[in-house]
Structures are given as structure tokens and as C-alpha cells.
Length: 277
Image 1 (tube, rainbow, N blue to C red):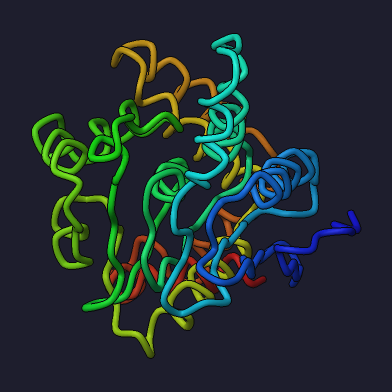
Image 2 (cartoon, helix red, strand yellow):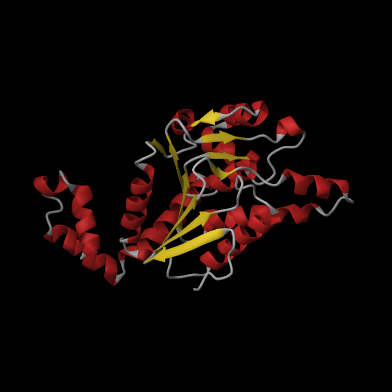
């Protein structure tokens, strides 16, 4: 897929890893134009079988995504009330990133807020920079509320009480707190985040694609009642176990030393060797 005609996103594909870098000066506000490009990218990415891992990052070291364009919201609010379903386009984009059969990673090196934070929460993983990454939900102080899935995703991510504090206070959350509360997977030194995310993306992309896709599908089912989620897991497990690729990889795991003391002491490295064969 060409991924052509993007002006605010710089897109590069390296094998099964696709990276999009937001470049919308001065502070990466999610204008209607940027929203349009992000939404279009989600649709194209969802349909692209060549991509297994997607990374979103920013060209601005101080801003990942500031928030949705408040000036655009003012213009909309000054007009006649529209149908509620019109607001679902942002939800659709977030749901698409959350549910697509690609692993989605947000590399958040600077400030992220409002709709940018909500979009980030729809990604499978989020990584930030110690002492720099800052998260803010600024909607309630200006008379609205997070309307881009935030009131629903945030409690699931950090718990109801902490979501209440983040949303109702409008205060900044630093990277260290975000990591401790589970909003960030990890807060890393500024000079380490790019290498960490790149290595993780490439490692995941080296694994059997169907296993990666169905693992995400099964994890997503964890939002269902336990027994229902376990049924999804069973179906996905059985789908994979009886593939020729799985049989070859499992045999290779044993050949390289799996289930031996020496092999199991280095199982992460051993499994990577299996994937590299």
C-alpha cells in the first residue's frame, strides 16, 4: 500500500513495521485536517496485510499530540446542534486502532492531552520519557468532558478513582505517575525510548504473523465476561496450534534447547532464535 498524499504524517514502512510521525506545527493540535489524516491512516492500515506493527510518534520533541482543536469545537458549538452520531467518527478511529489485527504502539516523548491522550489510550502500548512526558485531560475545566472515548477507556486503564482524579482535576500527570498507574507501559530515559520502541516493534514483527494477530484478538476479548473470553482464547489457541507454522516453530524450539535447564534460563533469547529461523 502506497500511503500517499499525507501532509501532516510522515510514513515509513520497514518490513512489517510501519511508522507514522506527526508533524503538524506549532504544537500538533488535532485539527480537522490532522484528524482526517489519522482517520484515513487507520482505515488504510487496517486493510493492509503487509503491516504487523504500527508505531505513532512525533517530529516535535515537546508535543506528541496537544489535544483536539478547541477552535473547531467552538465553531461547531456556535452552530445548530447536530446529530449525536456525528461525534462517533473520532470513536470509530480510536476503536479501529484498538481492534485492528496490528500491534499499535504510541511513542510519546512530549506532552499529550485531550483527544491526543484518548487516541493514545486506544493503542495497545504506550511508552514515554522520564521527566518529560506529560498527560493532561483539560476538557472539564473548559466546560466539556473527554468525548473521544476517554471517559470509557481511562477507567479501564487506571481504575475508576484515578480516572476521576485525572479527568476532574485537569492536572498534569507526569511520566513516573503514568507508569505507576498503568497509563504508560514504561517511562524511559530520553536517549533510550527510540531504541526501545524500535527493538520491540521489530521483535514482535519477527514472530509468526497469525500468532501475533490472534494473540491481540484474544487479549481484546478480556473485556468480556471471563468464561466468554476463555472461549475466544480456546478457539484462537486451537486455530494456531494446528497450523504447519506452529508445528515447525514448536519443533525448532525443542531442537534449540527448549525444555532444558540451559535453554529455559535464556528462553527469551531462544524464542527469538526460533522466530529468526
